[in-house]
Amino acid sequence: MRRLKLSSVVLLAPLLACGPGSISGQNASDGTEGSSDGGSSDDGPADDDWGDDGQDGWHDDDDRQDGWHDDDDSWDDGDGDGDGDGDGDGVGDPNGADCITDDTCASSQCYVYPFLGGQCGECNADGDCPDGGCTLHSPFEANGSTCNIGELGGGCETSDACQADTTCALVFDLIGQITISTCSECAVDADCADGLICAPEFNTATFAGKRSCIAPNTLAQDSYCELQGSGDQACASGMCATVDIMDLTQIGACGMCKTDQDCNGGVCVAGDIVINTGALTGSTCQ
Image (cartoon, rainbow, N blue to C red; front, top):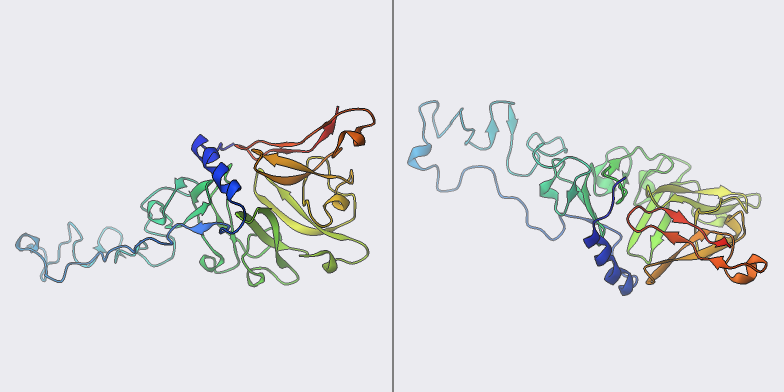
C-alpha cells in the first residue's frame, strides 16, 4: 500500500480550505517550456566534431549528427520520443514513480493531482489513448495512469472515450478540486428505469469505480455515497452520513447514524477516512 508523504497531507489543508474552482488534475507539462532540438546548432559542428568515420560531421561512435542512434537505429530529435511511437524515449522513471513534470518519466507522461502529487503513467488525457480513455492512478498506490478501451469503469473525459451504451459520468468529487469520471451505466437517476437510482460505486482507496443503476438501499456500510441527491436512498441503512476530512471539507459514507437520536440511546460516532490510505469507514452507534 502506497502512503502519501506528510508534505502532501500538509499541503492538502490549504487546498480544501480554498473551496471549488480549481482543476481536477493536470498534465504536468502544462506551463513548461518545450524540450530543445536534439540536432546540431546553426553554427555547425566545432572543429573537433569532425571525425574520420564519416563526412559532414557524422560520428558513428557518439551519435552527434541529428540525433541518430546507431545502437538501436532510432532517431531522437529532442522531443522526448525518439522513435515516435508515443511511449517516450525510455529514459527516466518508470510508471508509478513519483513525478512533478513529464520530462522525468520514461513515458513522458506525468499526471498530477492538485496537492496530492503525481505519478508517471501511460497518459494524462483521453487524447493520449488511441482506443479509449485515460484511467487515472490512485494516489495511495504506485500504479500510474493507464489507457483503457472505454470499458465500464474506465477513466474518461467525455463519452467519446467510452464504448457504446455507456456514458462518461462523474463518480467522485472533492469540492471540485479532485474529480474522477469513468465510463458508466448512467449519469443521473433519469437514466435508470423501474425505480432504480443512479449511484456511484466508488472505492476511495483505489480511486476506481463507476455509476450504476441500483435498487434503493443497496450500498453497504462504509461505502462511499453522495451527500446530495439520492445518497440516503442508495445506502442499505438509508443514511449517507458526513465524514470530515481534516475538519475542512466532507464526503459521504454509508453509516448507521447521523445523530445520537438514530442510536436508540447510544452515541453516534462519526465515520472517518484515513488520509494516507484512502480507507473509508461510515458512522456507527456505540
